[in-house]
Length: 136
Image (cartoon, one colour):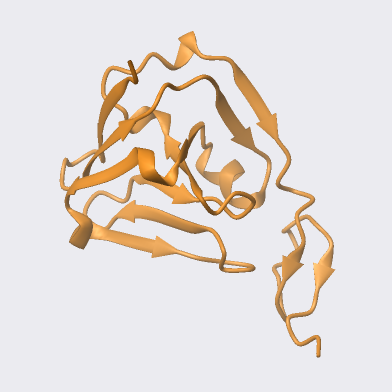
């Protein structure tokens, strides 16, 4: 039987359900994940359902714009993101899942700092190899 986890942002405007057996958590060393100190559960796209507050979600995109980072416009909490390296999966903020014991799951570090930076002017402090978006 697959586990069901209710989740929400801090203010409760965004509510969602994850129907998936969580087996591990991941960290990432990209410049965004480091700044938000993200601890995520990787779940398939079909395992995440938004139950309320879709209109309260905003999206932050940067670099290649493939990853879509969703956060609540009312309280500012990052709830989940569509993954760049696995666009058919979401990374869910484990601390947004009600009653989920993060300490009971192993944590695996993932490497994001070495992912290619795409664009004309990536910030100097962003690690990773540069690649111009204007390649013919």
